[in-house]
Image (tube, rainbow, N blue to C red; front, side):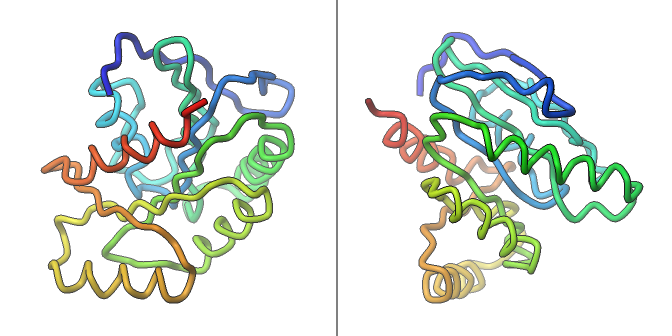
Length: 190
């Protein structure tokens, strides 16, 4: 996609800060440290989203505005063990509030670490997405860290067990990036 301008449009820590905005949205979900912010940066070809090797750094919902007409929502990661219980509860509530009021979601991208596979917290998140009837794309990150045969096996399991469309993505080689953009473009067609 030929992006002319992308920018951080907002950082939201609680329900009162969440904006009403009817622009099309792509939501990025996944465990802490799965590579949500890195994927957003790769897609935008611009380092807007803060990345960290420390899990649980994104504790807010961050909106990135693309060409004044599309929003990417970088959701807080789940499964972060080193965060206080009260903060985990706040983040869970923020996500629930957001999902209850968000408008015009065109695609929910669920990122899974291909080395770890589909874990119980991923299933919980998938259930939330399905409950809201959002179109789903599963992106298996860090795909350069597993063999092609392991990728094939994981893909077969996800299709068989969950009926999920999957794309393997590597931040190093950018493999899968164009395919992800194809899904996004299709999702935002009027």
